[in-house]
Image 1 (cartoon, helix red, strand yellow):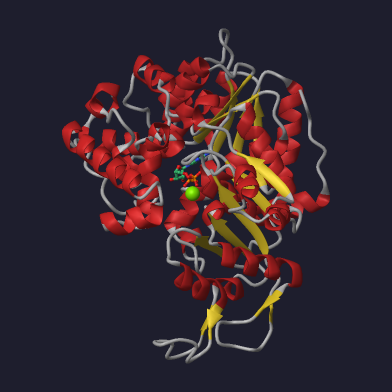
Image 2: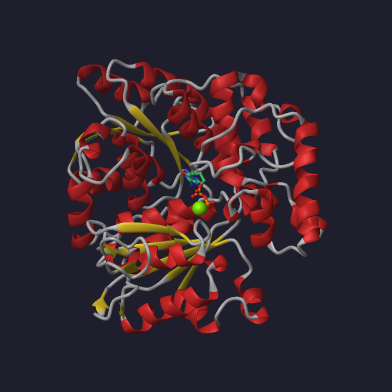
Length: 474
Ligand SMILES: Nc1ncnc2c1ncn2[C@@H]1O[C@H](COP(=O)(O)OP(=O)(O)O)[C@@H](O)[C@H]1O
Ligand SMILES: [Mg+2]
């Protein structure tokens, strides 16, 4: 068991963002009760401890309780049945289960019955604080939403959910990067959560009160992207009726998140490198040097090393961006995370409250866990969303697309988690595949030409190639 050291700086930071209220710690281990009581009190919570379910239930019936952190033991006193009693007690608390067992089976049972989260033992205090804050956040969402500039989407995407070892390591490295000004490269397959990681770094960094500006490097043609990034002066080009600041200027003192950096135009790569090296740039059509202090987080699922070898990505930029590299593993490598993610997406798209049991059997959930998930968390989210809209039939693989995920078949980029109507006939999809393949072959895989010919954006084309796995037919 690891008991965390608690630094005053860490406490100050945590206290400012915790919400307080009564929390019960139900655990058979006196050391755990002591550590959690002490640590959570210093974060501004009122804490009561209990070593048996009876004690905890008495407390739950005596006064309002916001959350229970409860040990789950395979047998003996603290079983998932007790969890149900705790959840149904008058306070309707959020429950966080902790257990030595981190097998999917244990997690499935807790999450199905309505636990808000699950923390495997041994844990450290910061992990528990983070999940507690997240569990309580939905209650105080209104308060957070009133903060200028924050939206529901920001809130939802700013939490990294998962119990796997990989996610725990990810949290540690996110904390470390957030303490620095180092540029960071986030890598991983599409849909693994790279955006979430970038926002999480911002949320935890000293720059959190400063802007987080996202740029999608493939969304625009070169000139437009250039003017978006660097801004322009009045008269810089036809149509520039007034001057406009670019994203770098808007991100000053904050973080700029450059998504799909591997696809960045060569000319703009050079300009970005200059901003990194000199911390300044000029607007299009301007002469004044604008000084900026930005931390750059870039994300890609491309093989940047291969791109530097073949010359389509600059070596020097690669090294400057890659001061720290964060690797987000595919969902299939961390299946323990699936039950919690399912619960999270059910709450997000089904609209029912935390604490309610999931309408899914252990077997159904286990089948979801066993699926391959080539589209990673994004695909899982689309599946849950379809389930919420259309019922359970949407969960079975035979009803899902055989090639790729229908969420990206609708011709324009879906907002994250957005999905199209599910039952696109397979035949139509085949034709689509063939149409794109023909065009790709015709233009020797020049994607820009192909996107022009097909009348879809470059980005949509890239997503389709990826989702339909056309690269493999090359
Ligand atoms: N660990 C996670 N916890 C909660 N939501 C997640 C997690 N990973 C991904 N998501 C959600 O899945 C969707 C896809 O994630 P995203 O960060 O956009 O993936 P990527 O940028 O790697 O393609 C988003 O809706 C995001 O909020
Ligand atoms: Mg992304």
